[in-house]
Image (cartoon, rainbow, N blue to C red):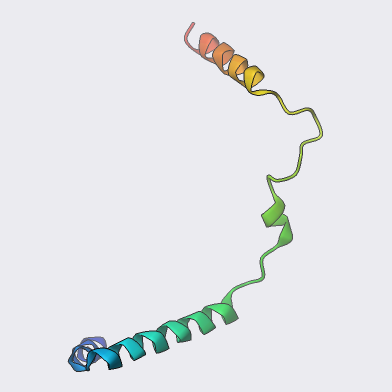
Length: 75
């Protein structure tokens, strides 16, 4: 019930006051999220970005492999 009454009161405020309230709430949420957020691990950022040890197949080789896969699948 408290939220409902708060919403009703907010709707009765002038537009500029409601805009200021939105900015205050947004800043409050930003600050809280900044405090709560865990530090990002560097490993998770670079996962998938590292070059594999073996040679990377060309687009033509990948296409041929896929065609061969489909041929085997639908035999």
